[in-house]
Image (cartoon, rainbow, N blue to C red; front, side, top):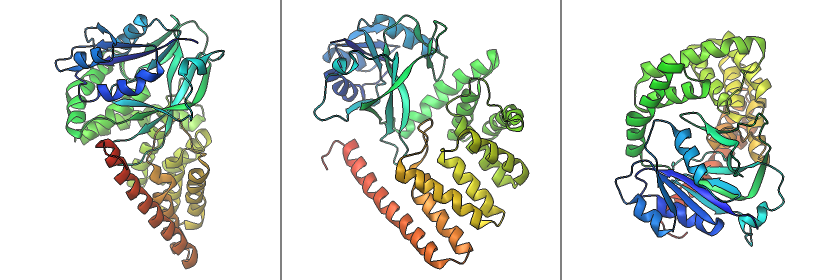
Length: 377
């Protein structure tokens, strides 16, 4: 049976680390924890789980720290996980991970990642976290680092259905501090020295919005639009298009809708849905645009399609989005569209469906809160 090593980079994660390592320990043969400067009980907790502990000075470079952790791994496979995440088995009875990986031909595997502690339901999305321990597989990018093959050959990526990663996240005050004191300064330094790729520019816009700096956020969004407009006009995807591109386009489209720029929004909706036809927020955007034009019949098709994507689990797993776009938001907007058409029966059915989704969402939030607080439901 092949050996699997879990690799983590941490700093002041005492509040989360024990939960993470408890979930990982049954599945791996080795745990590598690379600390980048903790001043709390993080190291002591890692020792309790017999982790191999290493120290790496923080360099404003997540890829550098991540790659250092990979260099310490001795197993044939590596599982990368963060301290605020938990590994969940979806298999009954569970089979040892090393046994599952025997004879596999892929070089890497995606696992579904689920948001748990946000207070809002989000879609699962696929993320590469399990891969062979090869010197040619390394992370690249100082922020939002990505696994790449340095051998000149692309990764061959499979999907592992037996495990899922649950992400609990941090408290709002912790998130604000990380954004303000660490993330924005890192991104601005990268921006000043070499410029930001699309996904990092989008991340920076989102962070400025989170710390209530709308002027700086709008500057980022304007640059994003200027860089993407030529691609919308030609229909050619940007080179090395980021996984966040569907949501970047969605957010740009929302701004165009608010400004009433229907001509540009038509271009964005049409081309975005050619590129990403199963991303629900973009379909919702198209429906909202048609409603704004006074065309509710056309809008119903987009809202119905959002609901269909939810029913069939057929939506894109490329980018996380609020599940309301395939549930209560879609049903509510469908009801309004039928209402505008004078179809009271269909409108009432759609509104009733929206109410049912909200009740289900409330039950989910109660259960989620109980799990987060450590109680049994």
